Structures are given as structure tokens and as C-alpha cells.
Length: 226
Image 1 (tube, one colour):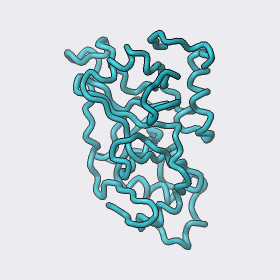
Image 2: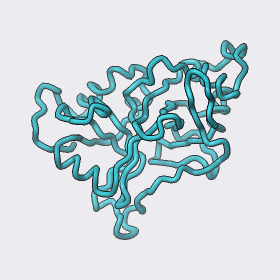
Image 3: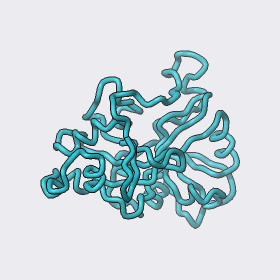
């Protein structure tokens, strides 16, 4: 669904599971966890990151396999885009009903999820909400849903306890992410729901570095991981 107003945002209109290549469960074959796939973890951009689109970015990696990787940037705000106004633009609520939204809808963050399909919306959310054939569990506590149904649920106060809406996503071709980690573009560590869903978006990069015990001033050009 495209809305030709100040912001053009598309959510899948029907329940449709996002087409994301996930690795097999650990021990189930060639794509087992022992191969080093990082879905469900955080990527933290190193200061030497050469791509300005990812400078000082923290990315939740939704999928990583031999077919490539896909993730959502969780610390780049989408400018002045307002979530209640998006609900109006998507015809989910009437403009007069903005003042009646539940608190988590009024304060929900809208993020620049990445440079791919920047007009498409993705909701990262806690696992207390699930839509059959639409929600993709990433790990035990975080899921991804890209259909408009989740926005309707949030507007009614029936959605997940924690959620962020991201416009666009980051994508890597097969082997690309592995090469970038070796070239010292990224650190990686276990995901932190408090960081992903936390309210202070501007502080998330520093928080992510502190999470793995790193002072930004101490980072060097050596490739690393936590």
C-alpha cells in the first residue's frame, strides 16, 4: 500500500510471511550454527566504516545464511516522521482519533531501517504478539512483522508490548557480510531487547559499545567480535 502524502510508506496489506532466507536450526545440516551465522545478533559499525549510510549504526540481524543477510538499523531516526500521523496516512485511524491512541502507539519510534526499499515498513517487536503466516520469530524474544495488521493492533492497544517501526532494511549478498566483518567494518554481539526497543535512539550506538565493554576511543583497525 503506497500513500502519496508527505511520507510514502507501504506495509504488506495481507498476512504474508516476510521472504527472508533463514539458516537451518543448529545441527540440522550445512547451515548449522557452528558455521558462524549471526542472525539474532547485533552488528555495531566500527569507526572505520566507509559507507556513510551505516556510519555509527547498530543493526539487528534478522537473517544470516549462505544466501546472504538482512537486518534492521535500530538507531537511526526517520527524521520527523510521526507514527500517529502514519496511522492516519495508512487509513488505520481517523485524524481525530490520534488523541485516543494508547501510550505505546503515541510514543512508538519510526526508524531508518536501511537503504533498501525505504518506502516499506517493518515492525520489530517483542514475542508477545504473533500473526500466523505473517510474523517471523527471529529468536525467543524478538519477532518481525511486515503486514499492516500489526499497525492496526498497535493502534487498538492490542499489539506487542515493545515495538519499533523501521522504513527499509539492510541487505548483504552471499558472503558479503562475512567479508565486511573481516575487513573491520563491524563488531557483533548478542542482541539486547532493552537497547533495540529503548527510547533514546541517539544513545544506542554508545550503549551498544558499552554493552561489549568498549570505549569508542580505544577502537583500532583490527577486526573483532564480542
